[in-house]
Image (cartoon, rainbow, N blue to C red; front, side, top):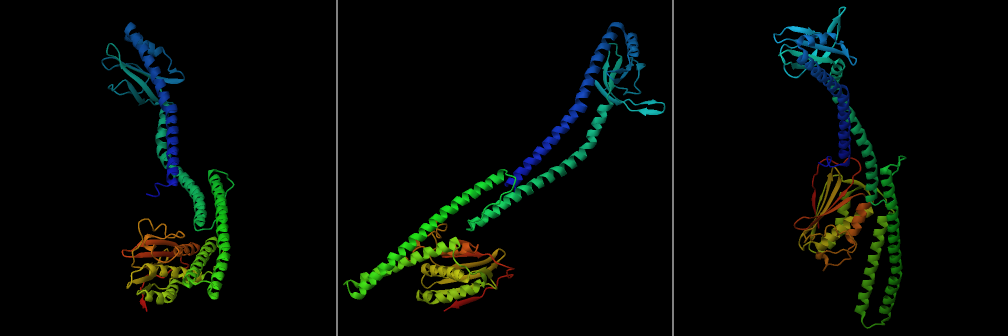
Length: 465
C-alpha cells in the first residue's frame, strides 16, 4: 500500500494516463479524418443522388431513369461511380457493379466492387445507397470508397502494434520518469537522514537543472543554515552560562569549606548541606556540558571494534555492589559476538546510566535483566527493570533534559541520565526505544553493527553476586 500512496506511483500513473489518452485521441482523430468523415461525405452524395434519381423515376418512369443512369459519367467528384437498377421481377435493367446482394438488408450497403481490365484486377470498395422505388424497383447508387476501406484496414492492422508499442513506450517512459524522480528524492532523503542523525553540516546536493527539486533543496539548505546557526547560538549560550556558573559555585564551595574549617558557623549541618548542594549543581553543569559536547561532535570519540556483551558485563560488575545494597541482583543474557564500531567509554557510560536508572526504579528484592542479541539490522541491547514503568505519554519525553516522570518525583537525580544515553546513542547512529514490559520498563537500543552479525542467539545466563 505504501507504494500505491507514493508520489512516484501517482506521477507515473498520471503520465501513463495522459500518454494513453493522447494515443487514443490521435487514433480517434486519424479515424475521423480518414474513415468517418469521408464515409459520411460519400453517403451524403449518394443520398442526394438517390433522391434526384427517385424524382426522375416518379416523373418519367423506369426507362427514363435507366437512360439517365447510362448517360451519366462513370465518375463524380474524382471518384468512381457505381449503380444498379433492378426491376420488380429481379431483372437487371442497368448496372456497372460486378455483383451485389440479392436481398436488400438496409438503406446502406458496403461491398467489394473489383473490376478486371486487361487481365488485371482493379480493387474497388463501393459505398451504396440501397432503396426501393415507387414501382417496386430496386436502385443502388454510390461511389468508390477504396481509400476509406484501406485506411480502415490499416487502422485495424495497426491496433495490435499500437497497443504493444504504446504499452512498451508508456511503461519505459514511466520507468525512466520514476527512476529520475526517485534518484532525486533519494538524494534528498539520504541527506536529510544524515541531518536527522545530528550532522547539521550536511547539505542537500544541487544539480545544474535549477528545477523545482533544486529550489526545494535550496530552501532546505537555507533552513538548515539558519537552524545550525540557532543551535550554535543556543549551545554557545548554554556552554558559556555553564562555564560562568562553575566559577562562582567553585568559589562558594571554597568559602563554605573555609567557614566550616574555621568554625565560623555553629550550624555545621547547614554548611555540609550547602556544600552537597553546590557539588550537586556542579555535577549537573558537568553533565550538561558533556551532553553538549557529545551532541555537537566536540567530544574526542575513539571508535573501534568492541563487544557489547563485554561492555555490559563490565558495567554490571561495576554496579553490582550498589545493586546488591538495594537488595536486587543483575541477570545477564548476552548473545555471541555482538560486535559494533563505537567509543568504549561512551558505550560504557550509556550502559552504566541505564543500569543506574533500573536500580533506582526497580523493586527491592527484584532483578535487573541485561540482554544482547544480534539482529539483521544490528545489535540489540535490552536493559529491563521490574519497577512501575512509565506513565502515559512519558516515553516520548524521558530523554528530554531535566524531565522527571511521576515515578521519579520522590527519587534522587537531576533528570539528565537518559538525556546522556540518548546523546550517546545518536552519536553512534543507534535507535533507542522505551517499552513498558508489564511489569517494569525495558530500554532497547539498536546499535548498527559493522560486518556480518553472528547467526542465531544463544542465551548465556549469569547472576552477578
